[in-house]
Image: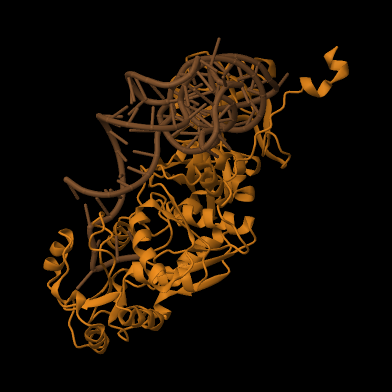
Length: 489
RNA sequence: GCUCCCGUGGUGUAGACCGGUCAAGCAUUAGGGACUCUCAAUCCCUCGACGCGGGUUCAAAUCCCGCCGGGAGCACCA
């Protein structure tokens, strides 16, 4: 028989291959990558993709990961965000080896800008903004585009020294006015922003690099070998490649992943900021938000987020974010650790009558030995069950209070019948809490609040992610009162 | 309008470069069942996809063409 010859063949094998990311193309020597968030606020679930993906690859290849904070638009920089981003990354267990802040590097960008002007690969235009754009669309240069480099150098000095006001002069990188893609033709690289305060540099600089310029310079200076970015940057990549060509630099490998549509979530930094200010959100960690801080508060583990993004991969197709899938990963991580408690929402008090003393001994976890909870109850006592469970009970129906016993509901109170466990599959099982239970509010991601009672032993064991049976996984905080933040079912 | 990219079940992904082993794998979701105690976990079962139409070929999810659909960009934002 097969059983004798090869018993392992009969064994049902569940080899769930761990999903892994594809190899990076063109790896030669050390891999250097970067994450480039802009410090407008803390990171949200969408940002975590680039962080995780970069981290996965640099860890796999033993490479370096640089956190480059892109704060070249002072209008969109918040001082607190610099540290918040780092904290978010640490929570995600993303290991970055170096931090580069672009506002420290203005002089570097200026130097390269000058060199480009000398090479005749850029110009400072005084043309009317709209006119310039219109000409570009019809593949024509603004009249001053091809003036002698010396003129443009002089104008550049003028920009730096404050000779021009906002929008009066702009530094433009030449590409190809005949480029079939209008998005690639000559692009602005430095703008003047006077009377604007940068949180870090104050009013020291009035000429700000635009993203395409500073990114290209830094990607080279930092020695990046691979760049992972969203596909909304594809045209920016083409633009930046001109800089690499002009300077004769080696180009990194660019990989563009698709856009993620994240439904049912509030992610927009400006919106959140406004909401916090107006008091409609409690803070960046308000559980209605899609920030990492909020997910963390709800008990979503960083490992679940990591697995999710690895599963999603980095194809160029757009994807729809699935909370269900994220929750599934999270559940598999937290379930083995989540102590079980009874939480009765919309509690209804009921009297219990028994001819013998009753008590309940309840394991903290059904599959893992974590100890037991014990509630001595006596013969006449009260319990709470949810109003819905009460509504569903038919008169004289035999049902079970989980881990306590089987009862009959006589329309008024609960009569103890027996503790016959063989009935379990046949009768309704509901949960309950004893009379000395403690009030608890659970805050749901949709903004609603479920309040009720949770069994008293929560005070001893609670805290952290637990499972409220027949309710869901909840991150519990205890200080004076018991509060929970709902993760998922 | 112009330029570019992409289309495998509800969701994500494998397979596509190098046609056959793919009447399409995995995960998740949904439905059902098992389990001496959860609407959790575990185990089992079921439903569910190659956008459409041609072509090449003995053979196409895989190659070619057309169509349809989706997306990105065309900012002195990132």
